[in-house]
Image 1: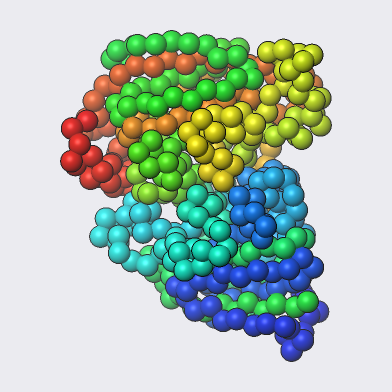
Image 2: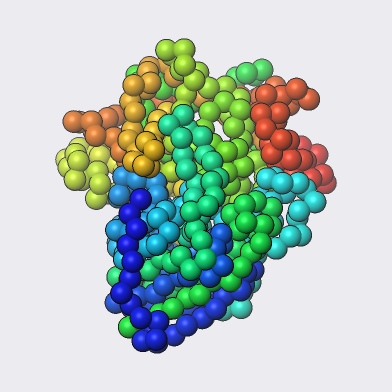
Length: 213
Length: 245
Ligand SMILES: [Zn+2]
């Protein structure tokens, strides 16, 4: 795990959005712009998808990114790769140390399987994404484009025996990750409302999105 | 298998798709050793419901697929259960679902350009194009391509997360059997795993047997493999509440 601090000053940012737990962010980031996701209170999970702004069928691919870097975990130095083998973004700073791209997003449907059938109506990341794409048809993103995402600030270690564990405790208040866009991209964030597992410390909290030119 | 209906062999750079009914059994056998089968699943009644690798892994707290595991859709349902999983050397199999599929560029870099004019049916097909061809037959496109399964391919990770393809267990005679718990559109190819570094393009054929599975009993291994799977089966039952098989 490599920690890398940023020298960027939030006072020089061109935009700052706060995304409350259970809300979404959907917006464009231009090529060359850098943004920071800040885990304001710690223990939060930010479930994020990236698209080529001109064609959402080109998008972040967990599989291609994993294969490209020969490693399961994301951190400073990782380049995020699209399903068309293009470079979407670079992770340029990271004070958390490791981010997950295996575990996917929570959904009301998978909550029924993971926890109990009675959890069907608890709010979940995929519902936030569904609302985002329904409220913003101008982005041209459809349900078929909602795929295997990144979970910033989450730690999901794999064991040599092939186990998958949901660890905790890497992120903390104020930890952040910073990415620079290598093409015009659309970013879709669900700030995870999950109440059933420790990914949010059972207490979902807000994140900040800070954008620089 | 209670009733075997059809047997076929696919060559090592092939692709195929078929719709299987709930209760079908599919057994895939690695004939020569070192085969890879890329596979995707869709609900034929709602093609927006498809195989979801993250849900499959996290529901069952696993990085690999093996006997007992169920293959989940993004809607909390189970397309298929891995009811048998045999390795010729006695150990269980280990199947990958995070490394995706080869593409024209990666195959060309390793083994040369795909060229039907020169190579005819020995051309160096790649998994991505093979999936695209099959998906288009159902009105699907790259936007519909999800993280796929790679049967027979063992990908291991070290503590730092570095991955590699472990070919030590890729024996002739390895087989895996899927019992379909929903009507399912299966899209598959037999192109090499994307981490395969063999000197020559590995044309590795597989045998595919189709039949009818024995009914799911109360003590079913997959259903009881984890409490999550019991709930997944309940979701399937709910889905078929109004349908008679
Ligand atoms: Zn979530």
